[in-house]
Amino acid sequence: MINREDMLELTRRMTVSRSSIKRIAGSYMDDEGYVDGTFNVNFLKLSASEKQTNLNIAKSIPFADTNVNLKEFKFSESGEEKGSLWQLLLGMKACELKNDALMDTFYEIIAETYVSHKEYAVYVFHDIYDIPAKASDKERLWESEEVFEYMIGAVCPLVEEYTPGLPEWGFIFPMFSDRCGDIHRVGIYNADKDHPHMEMERLFQIKQ
Image 1: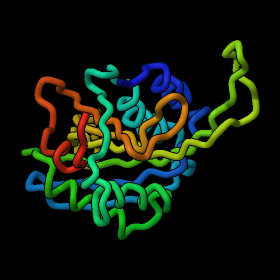
Image 2 (image 1 turned 60 degrees about the horizontal axis):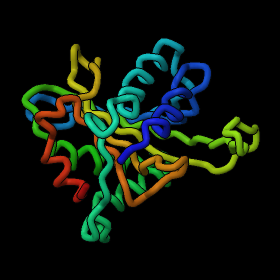
Image 3 (image 1 turned 45 degrees about the horizontal axis):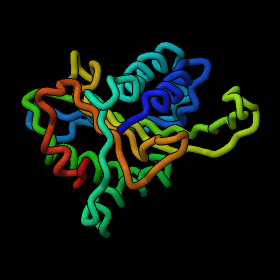
Image 4 (image 1 turned 90 degrees about the horizontal axis):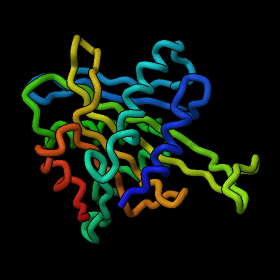
């Protein structure tokens, strides 16, 4: 089960002035699921309005209703084998989204799996959060206790050409639990909780 306070700790920082997101990469898919263009940029070089637009997308994943729209899953043993999506995600995180070959592979896998009959975008955000230590009375201290490096992925329908709406599906990897990262777990988001994208759960090879 997801502790909502863990998610709120992440989202409180997702403002233009406080965000520590370093990079955003993505692709645009046509209505047949083919890649129609990609991008890979330094988040800090975006304008304030561009940052806000993208933060709205990223924030909607961890800020979703916990254990309803956003659920935690554990990767199966086979899901962590060599050549798995899990291994690809670790590689994407390690290179901070800067390896275009890895990103292109990820987009192609999503395009082959995700069920949609309209144009959509795949966005991936890379963030490094210096988790502040807390005193025994739960007041924050200035010293960093641990570093949490993670990605937020979002699949968004296009409302205009190259203009995404809010996500229909997304993920957080690694999962943030008890104020630390867990590479064996992932948070999966579905905007429509009654009709989740089960094809993506099968792709991730996860279990609740």
